[in-house]
Image 1 (tube, rainbow, N blue to C red):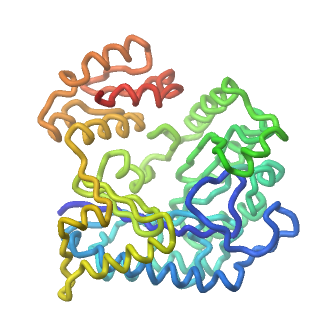
Image 2 (cartoon, rainbow, N blue to C red):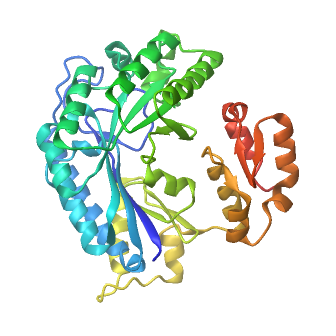
Length: 409
């Protein structure tokens, strides 16, 4: 049976973080500058959220027919802030998925959380409805750093939620941390890592802050001192060393796990498995065809309505020629598939296996890319090992450059 992963996009946040350029919208009350903030959803937005979830469930139902024989191995609620949804709504979405898809009994089901939007009642609901993995956005254990980047929680709130999750029974928890924050130095960052590892989560995602254009933090960058490129690289290097010393192996450029706790859902992306995304702007790739949901709410509603019209009364999906344009379907050429196989695979520390490449494409990786591989090995950014190629530590520092070399002209 073929395997499938499902992503659910919840584009709502109580308030957007100052560095965020993701597809999300603030729906909370209170000021946007972090002062006099009240953690509540504005009443007018409660109906917007309910309407969105209704559309989301319609999309889930209408998209199911082509995937009836697939085995769903992971479900991931991302955003935005999925934990913002009212109690019962997450259960409703999961029930809808189970009704229309074949969800494996051991499926990994993750929800991203902002600590300020979760209480013990929600955590118990998550356990009851089958969520078995939490991804908590801490970012920093320093309250001053959290305020500088516009997070709505403090460390005490995070720790309270984390310990409640453990007490209730969650045994697979990821914690997100960020480095290269405004006015942060290496010692500051290492204090966060020490506090995180003291809690012994099963997984740590460690990202470096990127200043994106047209975000409030980028506009205010002159107010702060940001780490230099050299300091940022040192933070990354120390992350790997420190987490390894504490029992976490790096399996992807920014992700670290205890044995047996690598994120199954994200590995589907890096290994080019089949996944479908539901919700505003969600991306999908199944059987080497890509498509994206609209990023505008009105267009998303029209998209779901058209999707429903393309499903016949018996529940069978009827894809017509004009649906390729309507749903923005993008069949990938073999060359495009090869490019993705290489640059996505190289994100993982195991790298890319030449035998697997041959089994998938019927061509030799060395014959196609031998000269590129030789050049990159000569630079010291790539290494050959037992039929595989992988990034070196130096290669990780320039990973974007390395991966770009595997694009065909």
